Length: 131
Image (cartoon, rainbow, N blue to C red; front, side):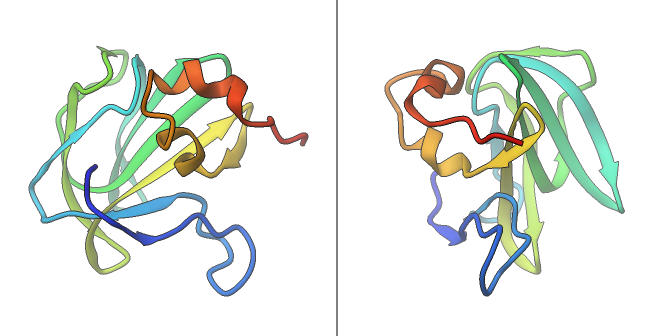
Protein backbone atom coordinates (compact mmCIF):
# COMPACT_ATOMS: atom_id res chain seq x y z
CA UNK A 1 0.00 0.00 0.00
CA UNK A 2 1.22 3.50 -0.70
CA UNK A 3 -0.52 5.13 2.27
CA UNK A 4 1.35 6.39 5.32
CA UNK A 5 2.05 4.07 8.26
CA UNK A 6 -0.55 4.66 10.98
CA UNK A 7 0.58 1.88 13.34
CA UNK A 8 4.17 0.57 13.26
CA UNK A 9 5.49 -2.87 14.13
CA UNK A 10 5.48 -2.94 17.94
CA UNK A 11 6.18 -6.28 19.60
CA UNK A 12 7.05 -4.47 22.87
CA UNK A 13 6.29 -1.12 24.44
CA UNK A 14 3.13 0.97 24.43
CA UNK A 15 1.53 -0.94 21.54
CA UNK A 16 2.95 -4.34 22.50
CA UNK A 17 1.62 -7.17 20.42
CA UNK A 18 1.21 -5.30 17.11
CA UNK A 19 3.00 -7.83 14.90
CA UNK A 20 2.81 -5.91 11.63
CA UNK A 21 2.46 -2.49 10.03
CA UNK A 22 -0.85 -0.69 9.32
CA UNK A 23 -0.99 1.49 6.22
CA UNK A 24 -3.66 4.19 5.93
CA UNK A 25 -5.74 3.75 2.80
CA UNK A 26 -9.36 4.41 1.86
CA UNK A 27 -11.73 1.45 2.05
CA UNK A 28 -12.20 -0.56 -1.12
CA UNK A 29 -8.75 0.15 -2.62
CA UNK A 30 -6.91 -2.69 -4.40
CA UNK A 31 -4.42 -4.51 -2.16
CA UNK A 32 -1.46 -5.97 -4.06
CA UNK A 33 0.73 -8.98 -3.25
CA UNK A 34 3.99 -7.67 -1.76
CA UNK A 35 5.97 -10.44 -3.49
CA UNK A 36 5.49 -13.50 -5.66
CA UNK A 37 4.34 -16.70 -4.03
CA UNK A 38 1.48 -19.10 -3.39
CA UNK A 39 -1.63 -18.16 -1.44
CA UNK A 40 -1.78 -20.47 1.57
CA UNK A 41 -4.81 -18.88 3.23
CA UNK A 42 -7.65 -16.68 1.98
CA UNK A 43 -10.58 -16.22 4.30
CA UNK A 44 -11.76 -15.23 7.73
CA UNK A 45 -9.81 -15.30 11.00
CA UNK A 46 -11.87 -14.33 14.04
CA UNK A 47 -14.40 -12.67 11.74
CA UNK A 48 -11.79 -10.62 9.83
CA UNK A 49 -10.71 -11.29 6.27
CA UNK A 50 -7.04 -12.05 5.54
CA UNK A 51 -4.80 -13.36 2.77
CA UNK A 52 -1.49 -15.15 3.48
CA UNK A 53 1.16 -15.80 0.84
CA UNK A 54 4.08 -18.22 1.10
CA UNK A 55 7.06 -16.59 -0.65
CA UNK A 56 9.45 -19.50 -0.12
CA UNK A 57 12.63 -19.41 1.98
CA UNK A 58 10.47 -19.67 5.10
CA UNK A 59 8.71 -16.33 4.48
CA UNK A 60 4.95 -15.81 4.75
CA UNK A 61 3.26 -12.42 4.47
CA UNK A 62 -0.32 -11.72 5.53
CA UNK A 63 -2.58 -8.80 4.72
CA UNK A 64 -5.45 -8.44 7.14
CA UNK A 65 -8.54 -6.39 7.81
CA UNK A 66 -9.53 -6.41 4.17
CA UNK A 67 -13.12 -5.91 3.02
CA UNK A 68 -12.97 -8.44 0.18
CA UNK A 69 -10.68 -11.36 -0.67
CA UNK A 70 -9.91 -11.72 -4.39
CA UNK A 71 -7.28 -14.49 -4.31
CA UNK A 72 -7.94 -18.13 -3.57
CA UNK A 73 -5.99 -20.76 -1.68
CA UNK A 74 -3.21 -22.29 -3.82
CA UNK A 75 -3.32 -19.39 -6.33
CA UNK A 76 0.14 -18.44 -7.64
CA UNK A 77 0.54 -14.67 -7.49
CA UNK A 78 3.17 -12.27 -8.76
CA UNK A 79 4.36 -9.16 -6.99
CA UNK A 80 1.64 -6.58 -7.59
CA UNK A 81 -1.23 -9.04 -8.21
CA UNK A 82 -4.46 -7.69 -6.72
CA UNK A 83 -5.33 -10.10 -3.89
CA UNK A 84 -7.92 -8.15 -1.87
CA UNK A 85 -9.64 -4.81 -1.27
CA UNK A 86 -8.85 -2.66 1.74
CA UNK A 87 -11.09 -2.37 4.76
CA UNK A 88 -10.72 -1.36 8.40
CA UNK A 89 -7.79 -2.17 10.68
CA UNK A 90 -8.30 -1.50 14.39
CA UNK A 91 -11.19 0.84 13.54
CA UNK A 92 -9.14 2.85 11.00
CA UNK A 93 -9.34 2.77 7.21
CA UNK A 94 -6.15 0.80 6.81
CA UNK A 95 -4.54 -2.50 5.82
CA UNK A 96 -2.40 -4.53 8.20
CA UNK A 97 0.71 -6.28 6.77
CA UNK A 98 2.63 -8.87 8.77
CA UNK A 99 5.67 -10.92 7.82
CA UNK A 100 6.96 -14.15 9.35
CA UNK A 101 10.35 -15.68 8.66
CA UNK A 102 10.60 -19.28 9.84
CA UNK A 103 7.55 -18.64 12.02
CA UNK A 104 9.00 -15.54 13.73
CA UNK A 105 7.32 -12.17 13.16
CA UNK A 106 9.65 -9.50 11.81
CA UNK A 107 9.06 -5.86 10.94
CA UNK A 108 7.84 -5.90 7.32
CA UNK A 109 8.93 -2.29 6.91
CA UNK A 110 12.57 -3.44 6.93
CA UNK A 111 11.95 -5.34 3.72
CA UNK A 112 9.49 -2.95 2.11
CA UNK A 113 12.06 -0.19 2.34
CA UNK A 114 14.19 -2.29 -0.07
CA UNK A 115 12.21 -1.33 -3.14
CA UNK A 116 14.86 -2.51 -5.59
CA UNK A 117 13.46 -6.03 -5.83
CA UNK A 118 11.11 -8.65 -4.52
CA UNK A 119 10.91 -9.17 -0.74
CA UNK A 120 12.59 -12.61 -0.74
CA UNK A 121 15.51 -11.12 -2.66
CA UNK A 122 16.03 -8.59 0.15
CA UNK A 123 16.13 -11.29 2.84
CA UNK A 124 19.91 -11.23 3.05
CA UNK A 125 19.77 -7.56 4.08
CA UNK A 126 18.34 -8.22 7.55
CA UNK A 127 19.32 -10.64 10.27
CA UNK A 128 16.98 -13.55 10.75
CA UNK A 129 15.91 -13.62 14.42
CA UNK A 130 16.70 -16.77 16.31
CA UNK A 131 13.71 -18.51 17.94
